[in-house]
Amino acid sequence: MHAAHLDDQRRKEVLRQCLSVGIATGAYGISFGALSVAAGLDLWQTIALSALLFSGASQFAVVGIVATGGSGFAAVAASSLLGLRNGLYGLQMSRLLGVGGLRRLTAAQLTIDESTAVAVAQPEPAAQRLGFWGTGLSVFVFWNLMTIVGAVVGNALGDPRRFGLDAAAPAAFCALLWPRLRSRDARAVAAVAAVIALVVAPHAPAGIPVLVAALAAVVAGLLPVPEPRDGVDPGGPGSSPGEEPRE
Amino acid sequence: MTLWSTVLLASGFAFALKLLGYVVPHQVLDGLIVSRMTAMLPVALLSALVAVQTFTATGGGLSVDARAAGLAVAVTALLLRAPFLVVVILAAATTATLRALGLG
Image (cartoon, rainbow over all chains, first blue to last red; front, side, top):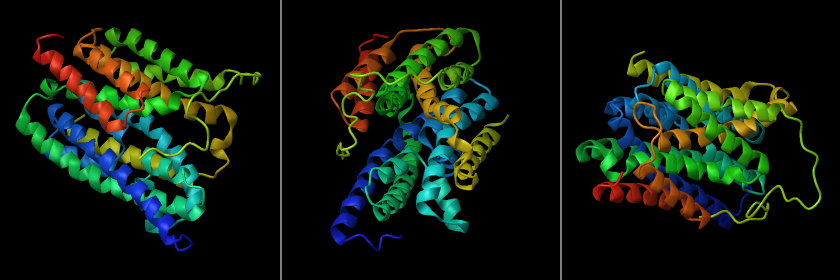
């Protein structure tokens, strides 16, 4: 869509990125499907989460909280807090895509980490739009297909703890968190949030520790902006804007 | 709250939040404090989720078990710039192997 200004080679290049991100992210739908069924959701509830909620971290939060016996309220609240960032992405994508009507609703549903990341990694607007739609659609298709596979196979295999699937979710969150830790502020917020969550965990119902830890972000927003100092690189390794996207 | 209402409410809020970005006037999130909070929120939440899901037992008490070893392997893989799927699979494999050996 809107990709008429791209020559064939650029178009193929962007589509290859879209597809590789779609497949890599989609494959991980297997662990979501398996974990969701293990948490006590049935096949249709699992499918509904992937098709309707369609935001990995929020989906894992929902099934994680349900699995540990947390309340539906805590699950919805954690999922929604994690989903706030999609609203922020939407703000950026809205300026880029300039769509209305049904297409705007579709764009909103496809607004996630991956589609936004591939879009903003492109230098020219036509490629940004292609990157958004291509990645959003391919992640949606693979993620939903693999969710079904995971839910069915996870069922057949029994306890996913045997396969270490309860370590797969925190590892996945860690991988999602990793690229966000380049600034000193972000590392401080991450450390404080983890400590708060673990301090609260033994004394509160499942899901609440994560919500309380979000206060770390609020406090970080309220703190005065530090003056930039000479010789301090706020980025760290790999944060140069010219870095090639990994495939 | 039934499981279905949890699923549908979470999905409804998720979509509303996504759509919000497309319908709010652009000035709303341009404030410095709000934009710093929204930038740090995913960091705080993801970090808290990693901590809770790795180090708490089913009842909410703290516990260091095979999942912690899985996470340590995941962090090592991330330091070595391993792709996402490799990180996740290595963490699961480590934890599964330790459990199969009767550890953690």
